[in-house]
Length: 390
Image 1 (cartoon, rainbow, N blue to C red):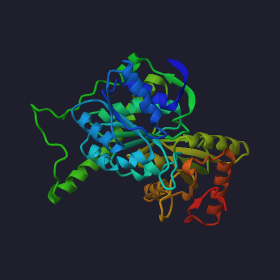
Image 2: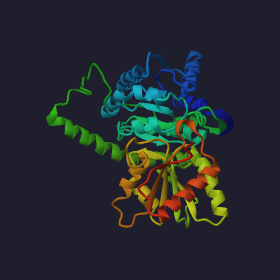
Image 3: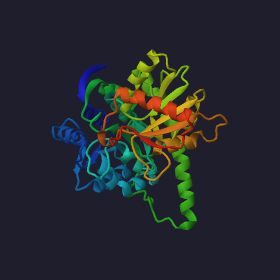
């Protein structure tokens, strides 16, 4: 297993190459452009035997992916921010048609004002589109989770499109140490793709047909049941990947949570900065820990509830606003997930890191202390945006 330094975007392209994708349909948009540029180069140089389809928009890119996946091709694309929103209409078709397209999203703030920098507003806008959605915190994780995404999406018991999210610029343009897998290892882990219901002129079938009222509700119920059931396969794939590489992934992952009375919940690359804050606070004798949501959809209800069983206070950091809502979007989901518990931890909502603004170690420490103060004062219903200049 080779360890090298590699930019996050190039690591994604390398993973797609090792996965032997058949079709790439993409449109460039900052900060994901390096991904598809590199893939175009690999195809042009003959290093990757795939069809590269340069299209006129992200809407067209996803539409092309649908056609390719429907006939049984292993299909990949990438986008970010406004590009993901331009795809929005077609994302629902991919999931309802059970087409296992795999996509990386270099998360980016949405306009306006215009921003090319990262936050989670784009992913939150596509929360309910029916895709499996997974978050990465490092370049290594993006590489690993993309390979896992192909195996998850293409499993005959799943057949759902899958997004792997990485923070724009903070990961897409960051060079980090990376353990690459050999082609033989990937081939052993990732079998050839075979869609059991691929379009075939000799065996015609209907896909995404008209759904009048007497059938639409049942179709949506079946889709939801199937997406929730995919978690079993996700766990199995992550276990097999861990056996292969020694790198293990879980829907909810903890950091120094033993004996912690207060937990901070984060998603994405800022989690690594938060770990440093937890280290410093624990050295000062404070009982704080960190949990990270790895799996966003299907939502890991059981794992989250188990992770907070002993905690008294859960502080949730969102990197997107739910305009006019009571809390950030992740916090709302967390509160809903914890509602059935007899003993629920108190939950405090913060929003920060919007439009690419960094959150320092000191700011994370301050956020945790402010969360503890708000809980002690009973101010649990107040959403607070951190580090807002007056």
